[in-house]
Image (cartoon, rainbow, N blue to C red; front, side, top):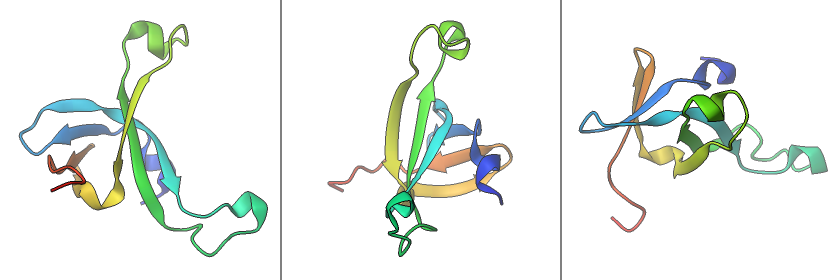
Amino acid sequence: MKLTEFLKLEVVSTDGRHLGRVVELRCEGEPEHGDTHHDRIVSELVFGKAGWLERIGFRAVNEQSVPWRRILTIGDGKIVISNRTEAD
């Protein structure tokens, strides 16, 4: 799967609750500064809920992020993330 295919996928919790849509994927390392050791490892999924005003750019999307390890499944147009938190 290409990274661009993740954008706009629906993000849901294990109980089926809609959490938002994928806004961004974050990777470790800083390839722009020559640190390419981790540049291919996705470490974080950023998602948010966007209403009409956010979609047309009048307001910023309220973003949340989760570590990549909390992703349980990817398919059928959605990403299911674990309800567990870092402390669990």
